[in-house]
Image (cartoon, rainbow, N blue to C red):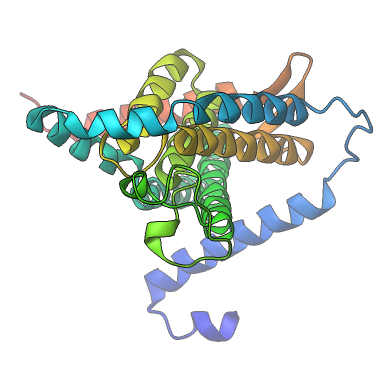
Length: 281
């Protein structure tokens, strides 16, 4: 790694070295602070999985009727859903999370120790959101190409339950919805650190998921499955991060954020510094 850094200019070399060191500390912390998971068979993810299976099965009953009726939406409403569906794209979520993680890591090396700890905790939170969105998206892509379900536009020719397993074509990649997966994974992950915003986050995720049905890209059961998959991945990773003390911790009432006060202090200091740099009036 040092050989690679030598090709960078001085300032960029220092920044890259700091990021590499932070990444190295995160990896070491992940491996060395792991605690044995509870042997209890009542892991919360099992309950979520069972509820998800029931929800998907129930949604299947509405797949064909909804797919046929949704095609008659007024043009104006259809355009709104076309625009809304773009919010479920995971690329911008990953870019924003990565930028926050990088900037917070760089800021952690400056200022008082407590403020640095706050920015470090913020970087870990962004890393958690990034990993949740990335891994849930990868999982959705794997499942949809393994299952090979036909898209709703083929409902009248192939039926709502046509499967061509191990298919790589887009027209046979309906189950689950990748947009719904990313939207609900991000809503769950961000909601862990912003409890007051959970209703708004899940409402937005629900609208994004329904927009995939409204534009004819997925059946209702596809988006329900995507929502369940996204939240399941977020829950599993939350427990994995909490057991290692990264971004989250295991509290008396379940999983909770780490360094809450330090993060608030760091963000308050950042807002204060930003205000002093802005021109008056």
